[in-house]
Length: 150
Image (cartoon, rainbow, N blue to C red):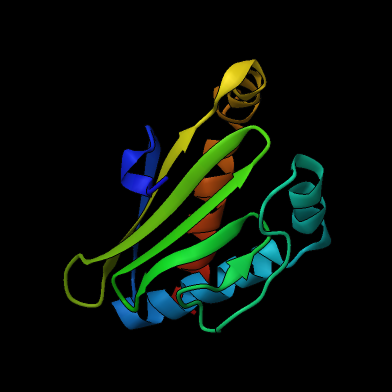
Protein backbone atom coordinates (compact mmCIF):
# COMPACT_ATOMS: atom_id res chain seq x y z
CA UNK A 1 0.00 0.00 0.00
CA UNK A 2 1.59 3.30 -1.10
CA UNK A 3 1.72 6.13 1.41
CA UNK A 4 -0.62 8.36 -0.61
CA UNK A 5 -3.45 5.86 -0.17
CA UNK A 6 -3.04 5.69 3.61
CA UNK A 7 -5.29 7.89 5.76
CA UNK A 8 -3.77 11.13 7.04
CA UNK A 9 -2.95 11.08 10.77
CA UNK A 10 -1.06 14.33 11.47
CA UNK A 11 1.73 16.67 10.45
CA UNK A 12 4.32 18.47 12.56
CA UNK A 13 6.64 21.27 11.40
CA UNK A 14 9.73 23.05 12.61
CA UNK A 15 11.87 25.74 11.02
CA UNK A 16 15.60 25.09 11.23
CA UNK A 17 18.24 27.81 11.04
CA UNK A 18 20.32 25.89 8.49
CA UNK A 19 20.41 25.18 4.77
CA UNK A 20 18.53 22.12 3.45
CA UNK A 21 21.72 20.08 2.87
CA UNK A 22 22.69 20.48 6.54
CA UNK A 23 19.16 19.64 7.71
CA UNK A 24 19.14 16.58 5.42
CA UNK A 25 22.35 15.31 7.01
CA UNK A 26 20.95 16.08 10.49
CA UNK A 27 17.73 14.21 9.68
CA UNK A 28 19.60 11.06 8.63
CA UNK A 29 21.93 11.15 11.63
CA UNK A 30 19.07 11.77 14.05
CA UNK A 31 16.94 8.96 12.61
CA UNK A 32 19.88 6.53 12.75
CA UNK A 33 20.71 7.53 16.34
CA UNK A 34 17.09 7.48 17.54
CA UNK A 35 16.20 4.14 15.98
CA UNK A 36 19.49 2.40 16.80
CA UNK A 37 18.66 2.38 20.49
CA UNK A 38 17.86 -1.06 21.95
CA UNK A 39 14.42 0.20 22.97
CA UNK A 40 13.46 0.90 19.33
CA UNK A 41 14.58 -2.54 18.14
CA UNK A 42 12.81 -4.17 21.08
CA UNK A 43 9.58 -2.35 20.31
CA UNK A 44 9.86 -3.31 16.62
CA UNK A 45 10.14 -6.97 17.64
CA UNK A 46 7.31 -6.70 20.19
CA UNK A 47 4.74 -5.39 17.68
CA UNK A 48 6.03 -7.57 14.83
CA UNK A 49 7.48 -4.94 12.51
CA UNK A 50 8.49 -6.14 9.07
CA UNK A 51 11.84 -4.30 9.41
CA UNK A 52 13.56 -4.82 12.75
CA UNK A 53 17.16 -3.78 12.16
CA UNK A 54 19.14 -0.97 10.58
CA UNK A 55 20.62 -1.89 7.21
CA UNK A 56 21.36 -0.57 3.76
CA UNK A 57 22.90 2.63 2.45
CA UNK A 58 23.96 5.49 4.67
CA UNK A 59 23.21 8.33 4.39
CA UNK A 60 19.69 6.92 4.21
CA UNK A 61 18.76 5.96 0.67
CA UNK A 62 16.18 3.81 -1.09
CA UNK A 63 15.98 0.37 0.48
CA UNK A 64 17.71 1.30 3.74
CA UNK A 65 15.97 0.15 6.91
CA UNK A 66 15.60 1.31 10.48
CA UNK A 67 13.73 -0.68 13.13
CA UNK A 68 10.08 -0.24 12.10
CA UNK A 69 10.77 1.49 8.78
CA UNK A 70 12.04 1.04 5.22
CA UNK A 71 13.14 3.97 3.03
CA UNK A 72 10.91 3.85 -0.06
CA UNK A 73 11.95 7.21 -1.50
CA UNK A 74 14.90 9.46 -0.88
CA UNK A 75 15.44 12.79 -2.65
CA UNK A 76 18.44 14.32 -0.84
CA UNK A 77 17.74 17.76 0.54
CA UNK A 78 14.02 17.53 -0.36
CA UNK A 79 12.08 14.46 0.80
CA UNK A 80 12.49 11.20 2.72
CA UNK A 81 9.65 8.68 2.73
CA UNK A 82 9.67 5.88 5.29
CA UNK A 83 7.08 3.10 5.30
CA UNK A 84 6.45 0.25 7.68
CA UNK A 85 3.98 -2.29 8.91
CA UNK A 86 3.35 -4.41 11.96
CA UNK A 87 0.52 -6.43 13.48
CA UNK A 88 -1.64 -3.37 14.17
CA UNK A 89 -0.84 -0.85 11.47
CA UNK A 90 0.48 -0.01 8.02
CA UNK A 91 2.10 3.43 8.06
CA UNK A 92 4.26 6.03 6.39
CA UNK A 93 6.32 8.91 7.74
CA UNK A 94 7.09 11.55 5.12
CA UNK A 95 9.73 14.18 5.82
CA UNK A 96 9.82 17.23 3.54
CA UNK A 97 12.38 20.02 3.48
CA UNK A 98 11.43 23.39 1.98
CA UNK A 99 13.28 26.69 1.71
CA UNK A 100 12.07 29.06 4.47
CA UNK A 101 14.25 32.09 3.78
CA UNK A 102 17.98 32.77 3.81
CA UNK A 103 19.73 30.06 5.81
CA UNK A 104 16.42 28.55 6.97
CA UNK A 105 14.66 25.29 6.14
CA UNK A 106 11.11 24.22 6.92
CA UNK A 107 11.13 20.57 8.01
CA UNK A 108 7.79 18.76 8.14
CA UNK A 109 6.91 15.24 9.20
CA UNK A 110 3.58 13.89 7.95
CA UNK A 111 2.21 10.62 9.27
CA UNK A 112 -0.23 8.48 7.31
CA UNK A 113 -1.51 5.17 8.66
CA UNK A 114 -4.22 2.53 8.56
CA UNK A 115 -5.17 0.59 11.69
CA UNK A 116 -7.17 -2.44 10.53
CA UNK A 117 -9.46 -4.47 12.77
CA UNK A 118 -10.29 -4.17 16.44
CA UNK A 119 -6.66 -4.61 17.52
CA UNK A 120 -5.65 -1.83 15.10
CA UNK A 121 -8.29 0.54 16.45
CA UNK A 122 -7.14 -0.14 20.01
CA UNK A 123 -3.52 0.41 19.01
CA UNK A 124 -4.45 3.71 17.35
CA UNK A 125 -6.20 4.82 20.52
CA UNK A 126 -3.06 4.02 22.54
CA UNK A 127 -0.47 5.42 20.13
CA UNK A 128 -2.28 8.39 18.60
CA UNK A 129 -5.21 9.06 20.93
CA UNK A 130 -3.02 9.52 24.01
CA UNK A 131 -0.80 12.06 22.24
CA UNK A 132 2.23 9.76 22.49
CA UNK A 133 2.81 9.70 18.73
CA UNK A 134 2.68 13.51 18.46
CA UNK A 135 5.12 13.90 21.36
CA UNK A 136 7.53 11.45 19.75
CA UNK A 137 7.45 13.16 16.36
CA UNK A 138 7.88 16.63 17.87
CA UNK A 139 10.86 15.37 19.90
CA UNK A 140 12.37 13.86 16.76
CA UNK A 141 11.99 17.15 14.84
CA UNK A 142 13.49 19.10 17.76
CA UNK A 143 16.47 16.71 17.79
CA UNK A 144 16.98 17.24 14.04
CA UNK A 145 16.81 21.00 14.58
CA UNK A 146 19.41 20.88 17.39
CA UNK A 147 21.70 18.58 15.38
CA UNK A 148 21.45 20.80 12.29
CA UNK A 149 21.94 24.12 14.07
CA UNK A 150 25.22 23.07 15.75
